[in-house]
Length: 159
Image (cartoon, rainbow, N blue to C red; front, side):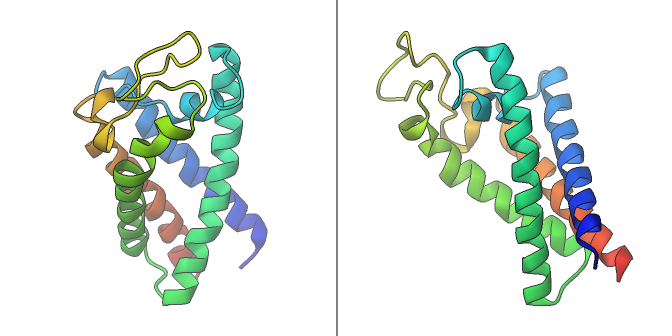
């Protein structure tokens, strides 16, 4: 399988996942903006943070796509449903393990133990990111499942 296709599919999966996450913000179902959270690692200027965040987010989407492809090959399953399952596991790990630890490493995020300061103004996500809205866990899992399903589906079609 050509690496060009893998890069293209990784981009399409990232765009699909980002569209779901962005739409959930537009509809008021979640306030989680992963590009903003990523971008504010690099700059405190929110307008620039969003741009930097999207750049890093797309690169991360490509990198994770290659990890998914390695997973598909190592297990020998190249299907949309296995991709969706991998996406659900990835999303659950993100919600339960990564996001709650973010305040301890993010330079501009308050924590649940220490409030907002002049430097740390971002709200911490909390367990399963419910501080960003009660719909956030479900939306995040759905978006991650879509990401995996798109990757698995494209690989399934190519075989």
